[in-house]
Image (cartoon, rainbow, N blue to C red):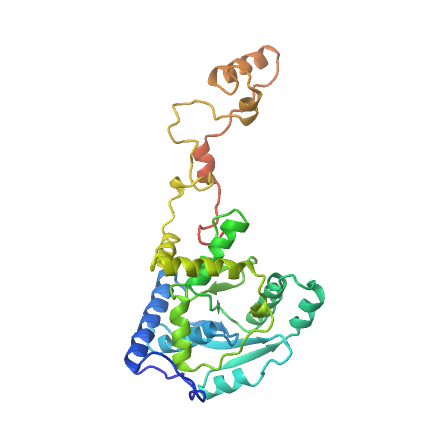
Length: 336
């Protein structure tokens, strides 16, 4: 079956290093990786109405292009609506996205909301704007999705974004957490998907150049040089230059979590590991006092006898750690 052609007329002077054969191979690889991510994480279901968040950057253009190709051959029917949030940044070329989307016959909607002025007014000079800007942007997109029957919100984050987020959380927030390929919003009303989760940024850059997408540069967050994300990105790029394939290895590791080999007591029952019989669970206060026998079975039994002799109620024994662990509800590892 022929695939929908979504490439606009090449810009004047546009050139790319790939010949047609290489471009075809790259396109097939992207389709395969996006299709694999959709299947692995159940991103799209029959009848879905998907809001494709289009920023004007290479990532979101590529995501829309590949999803349109898959839409033509997918085993389920789904609708794609390209949505752009016009944040009223000075000099933003408002005509570029509508002209492109009309040229390929893609249904779209432009949300107009002046978040730019708010961010510039609230965030002190020299401070990063990403946190506030992303919250306001997310709020506008979620509101439109709720009002228009959207069942999936597709974002253009790629494999390298997922890796960078993982290391940002590791280095600056002391947690093993990342950017999941699929998640549910905090209020439970929206399902967010990242179809490019398996696609590396270099392939997206080459594809966007080959397809001559009308890229719109970001003059807000993209122009900030004091972002820790950029520092982490430089680190990852250096790793890949020194050891090609390292980032792919780390990416696979994020999908192969071994809780018993880490230190999170909520994901693995270390208390039950090697526990003998009905030995009491350790008590931090007893261990810290340094009292002889504190926290042992003998000490606990003795305390219970003393309480009984004094007419006091015996202390309630601590519940078995494994039973408590099983009774507790945890968020999925991919959706912290």
